[in-house]
Image 1: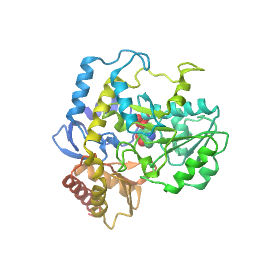
Image 2: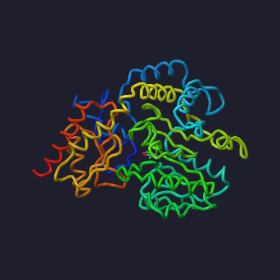
Image 3: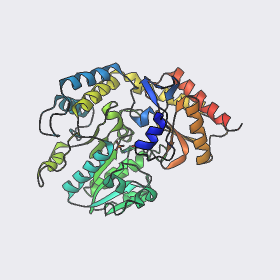
Image 4: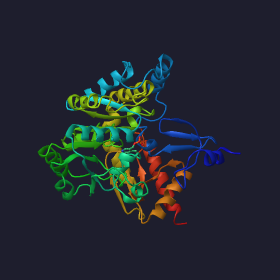
Length: 396
Ligand code: PLP
């Protein structure tokens, strides 16, 4: 029996149409399948592989840490050097109000921890979230996900959660002194890369301050340079109370984090003690990999600095009568077609033509372009050629 059938038979399936290619190796922006066919990774493993695949410094860090020790004890009991070093480094690149890192296993768990922290600090329960948001698939994270289709089958979920349109006045007006936190993505990913105005973000921050409400910004997809700055919130001249990181945080290994001011974070230490615990969160190998990847990202300043010129290539090249519109924020783009059917056909053709792409959870009429930041201009032109060829094939 071939591996595809074994995959379908024995690995739990959640997608009715998984891409289903079997990869043999990955290097830089290139993926190679078991038949030797090469693909450009046009979505960076869903914004995980921002510095590309197979970075030698990351591989070395993983090997060295795996040889030194892997799991030794649950989170927060021993001093694990990779955790300490990565937390110190990350906080050097964050504002002073974000000086304490809680490492988790995943983005969803970072969302869970952050919402618990907000409830613990404020002693309130009301949570405000945005329509079309995605913060993870666990039940707390699902409660704040902005789409009833995905929530409904799993009710009852968290009570006292209210959704409003991202960027709307209604969302800001709903914030009051019963609200524990507002949780939003700094740039909303799954609605097809939607960015709010700076005016709205500042008004949101001000209203949260007025009522002592914690502002949680989810940069699990937007962080680590994707938007053209290290953190997307820098472009809005605001600082969240809690920042959520994941995906690229682990340099290809599983890792998430919620980050806050230490005095706030310390409320998880008492009443009750062990306010948020995890066995594997902040795994030493994940932290070693993440730190090595982060060091690479900040050492190669050109990877982020060149994003505007690379985004310009995408915007200039990706013009076609079948393209209805594009959203672009940094090296992060959604390309809209007339219908979800057309989008799926183009995405499928892209894979056939050697470009891995996908659509968006709440924008099924858009394909996703978010390659590793290390992509060269020449590779970017090849990516555009493949998209345009895939669109043209739909007419035949
Ligand atoms: N938040 C955002 C914006 C995401 O895109 C994701 C994952 O896609 C998550 C949270 C959840 O992260 P994870 O899949 O690691 O639980």
